Image 1: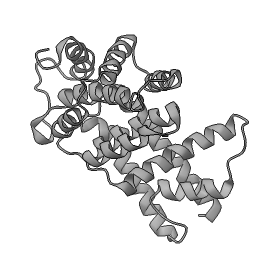
Image 2 (image 1 turned 180 degrees about the vertical axis):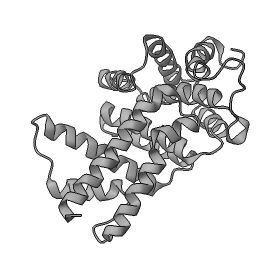
Image 3 (image 1 turned 90 degrees about the vertical axis):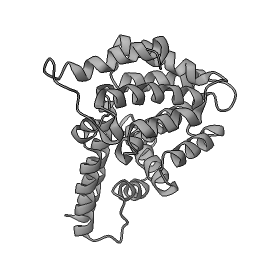
Length: 255
């Protein structure tokens, strides 16, 4: 409460309970890389995620109704409880404020996560998902997200990979909803990007890449490393994207 104020205290209650409720009474919380524990990482991850989401939405000077709905959609996809939604809204509002210091928030997240690439990638993906739904990653939002990713150690190639994954998922949903069909060639190309391979990769290379991606983004692994319970739904959707990409490539190649 001293470091986060009322919002930090509320998040501590919400997310701390999620982790502590799964531990036996009196059991010490498991330390994580960099000296942080799972509850502390979950607290900071959750709070920073919605603060940055608000900051990105305000990057062009105003927050549109579509961007507000995008943030709400992310909350819904993550299946937040009513209490968590209220905390998320408060953090989103903090992020919109002129005095919000994005660099300090990202540096704090990086430190508490111990620089773990899996958690930081999940953070960037959540921000990009909201930005894609909010304004299709247009205008100032793209620049802010690119700078944010770089500050968290996510390179330009990884950034492009994340975007390809999320756009493929959106395209699949659009096709299922009866909208204009997604070009099959483009969808296959995106599937290769999801697996971080190319059409020239061998079947063996593709199979290894598929297993590597599953291991890297597995919800249980991310949760063990400190991803808050409220964000696990995102990890599950990411895993589903990898599976769908593999199934598409496997079907086309007859593997």
